[in-house]
Image (cartoon, rainbow, N blue to C red; front, side, top):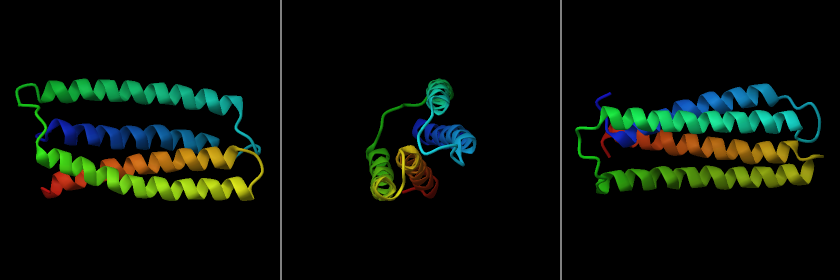
Length: 139
């Protein structure tokens, strides 16, 4: 990994979020009822803790790899982060409208909660993917 800390951590974010939430959605879909169950809440909490551990270990590894470089953030890093957040906000806004539509047209809270969670997950993936793309392209 000859990349900087920010790019390496975005790769860890992409892989961690894809793996953890991919597993979560594979376990809870299709729904067993109209509402979120206690087992799904426990699974979500356990996987969220796992994701935090992945982030911590990944950040430690990124710092260990880049320990001899100057970790200061420059104008390019700030601009790339802004582009990622901009794209993620579009996805999150769309996902919020989808969740509102689920609230109007479905019974129970399962689809509303998972539409919101799905939009958060996809927006994080879009943010990280945009940042990795910008680092790779040299923007």
